[in-house]
Length: 379
Image 1: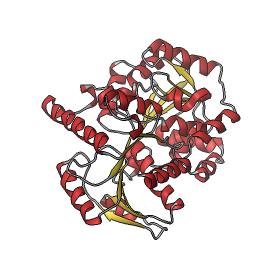
Image 2: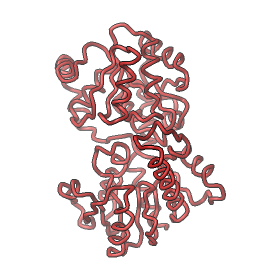
Image 3: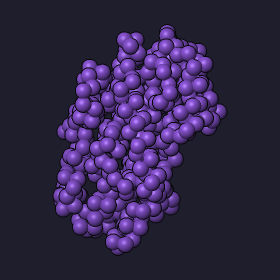
Image 4: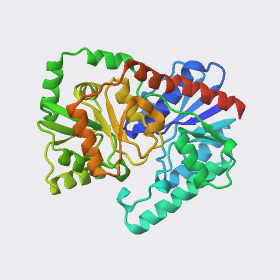
């Protein structure tokens, strides 16, 4: 069977979609010696990526998502390849593509949590973008042979948003526990604590104890309430580190922090260095994720993988994904977030080894890839 995977989100700067795409491609490369794969990549990744499985070929597809070029260049490319099946790991399926495909839906954020605050566009441009989004996702869901939902919450959202859709069209296949390089985690975990502290102080001006958040700063991530809760909790000699980017939304959050005169908030930006990332995880008191909407939950799983305590919102799929592996708060309540922060700082509660193993066993990239391969064969 000839299979195409649209891996244009492969680059790590694309956060969750990148993590999913990379583990999908390399997981299948490891386990499938039978089918023939064509991996669509943008120029930057095409130049550096090499496959070891002879059944895997890379194809240059320099077309940015959500553009007019994507709508025409991809169908033209796919027509030349003539695949038996195409997998789009995101819903941005070109409207003119007529081949058989499966698509992964990670979340329905613009349907379930629409907000003008989540865009830098003017009203007219936002209106066009929203209409384009609705048209594209309708096409992806209705024309796909199968829709992969990464959680029960996402599957439920799909059925609610598309009345009449056959529930058997949805395949529930979860993701793995974040980045899976155990060697890297262990390598940096063995550095002396003093060296880690010195590095964090020198590079990010992080001194003493801190709470860690990693992710985006979009409105549904709920970071404004988090910083207000941190101010209300008023922990002594503790910083709140908000890592993940330097985009418009982080800049807006920085302005919010300044306007509200909230102290001890540190923004390390996008963390390209594995050393920086692992040192932050290692030295954090705990990790916190106040998001009001998620399709899955890679960041908290990455924290649990590093044996960190996780505090997170119960207002999304986190309870489904993490079970008893986290302490939950009401993400809409600044007071409740502050209360849980104070409680955890005063009485740290470590996740048990048994619970950690149980959670990580449920969320495996290998398990995901084998389930998706089985799905390819069925469709």
